[in-house]
Amino acid sequence: MTAISHARELDAALAHLTGDDSVLRMSAAEAEAADGYRPGTEEGVGDRMIVNMGPQHPSTHGVLRLVLELDGEVITRSKPVIGYLHTGMEKTGEELTYVQGATNVTRMDYASPLFSELAFSLATESLLGIEVPERAQWIRMLMCELNRLSSHMLFVATNGMDLGAVGMMIYGWREREEVLRFLEMVTGLRMNHNYIRPGGVAADLPPGWADELRRILEPLPDRLDEFDILMDGQPIWRERLQGVGVITAEECLALGTTGPILRSTGYAWDLRRDMPYLRYDDVDFDVCVGTYGDCFDRYAIRLAEIAESIRIIRQILDKMPAGNYRIQDKKVTPPPRARIDESMEALIHHFKIFTEGFKVPEGETYVAVESPRGELGCYIVSDGSGKPYRMHVRGPSFVNLQTLPHLMKGSLLADTVAIISSVDPIMGEVDR
Amino acid sequence: MADTDASTDDAATAEEAPPEQAETSHGVPVETTPAGQVVLHPGRDDLHRVAHELRDEGYWQCLDLCGVDYLTHPNRPALPIGVQPERFEVVVVLMSHTDRVRIRLRVQVPEEDATCPSLFAIHPGVEAPEREVFDLFGISFDGHPDMTRILLPEDWNGHPLRKDYASGRIPVQFKTAGTGG
Image (cartoon, rainbow over all chains, first blue to last red; front, side, top):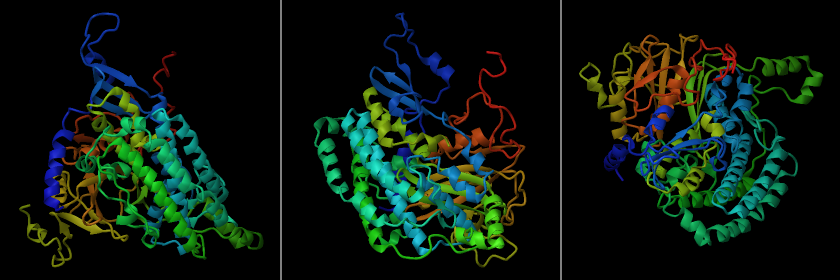
């Protein structure tokens, strides 16, 4: 596959992506005027109809609003309307020190908070020019893979619920809860952990973590097989997903789409394998790809990625090295708690780190990790002070949401829910 | 591309260039950050050409586009010679899957004419990010099909990520606020 031949295919994808035939670009007033149908009268019957869906719709995973243009039951054009959860987290990020920053970014993608923390911490470390100790890297990897597991479990649960397989919701949440319990054991919190911080992680793994983890992992492969029987073995499930919401690799590339949506088209791109960070070089895993780029592939990939994450976690269990869980650089790391009782300097040092924070050299950097939803990037500009001058997070959900109009074009209104669910957007990350 | 740098374009290395001249790639200054990330500094007029050339080289995917307001930090780390620092910057991240490398474009946008050419025709995926930059920085993109606010309400005043827009400066805006209703 050469660059040139691909560029030509990209051009073909561009032609209709840049057109007006799938995205409904109009204001609320224009939409109202364009809608010919007047309820209660004969006027406009048979015309295309504009329908508002959300933001308070149970299948929109938060507050996503869609404006749909319908021809009968078929969607012709649509537009996602976002911003209902916008809380200015990038602005807030400019007023928090690097020590506090992880607390902020972790609230963006609340289904996989550790990845935002990781991207933020890696970006800060890239500006500082430091590398965290070996054990910290493995702990980060372990926690992220567990978080990927819980995030995909949440997807399987909500995907089932959205399509009427309500039993799946309970099973998905049951497994997720087990994983969250482990995350709570390590970080103290079920969500929004603030565990991965610049310089390492907040605390070492607690005693008995390995046994607990083995206990959690032990039933999972059998449960995945059960899911397989419950979902894939069911004609209704397949009917509702197969061939629905199809997208091609070229369209994904042109739209900046990453993660399971891009992989569902058969395009094998996973940052963990292709641009490894942490210690992903040292573990074996497969990149799961689909064939048709439809809702079923996106579901199947996430289910397969759960199995791959379990495989990675088992290897981490065997390979976890001893050592420090955070860097022993006094500029970045506060002194251990015990030192504070015996040393005035340690107390001052501790106080300085948690009030002023540490200074980061001038510069700018972009660092990305593979979150369960795709490339999660963090762009930081530092002016040499203790707070980021600009902190931008490239949320994969935000960019992936742009595929919606193209996925929904020509599909039935009833498939909307299946398609939104298969994109797996987390609105906290979309709106930030 | 008819300038003096054109001869070094094809070689893509400008090691033989005199030291007082910035290294160039695609006819625009290029630098490498301490972390090894490659940054191009195209002017607004060069942006389309550079993005096109890069796309033909394999940078198929535009991953990210964001803005930066350098109002209170105008002396940012020295830009390459020939790049005039301005208040705003539009930062574009492109990805080459074949070479497995990212490249960053930093475009200077002056305060008095806060516009930038849109990359929509080359990378349709910048539609939402460009709207976000318009919404939060007030930089408008020429050639964008739908230059409207995306995160904030349509009737919001100001652009919050600008440095002269302090958080907590104004009360929270609601449509009914101040009308007694």
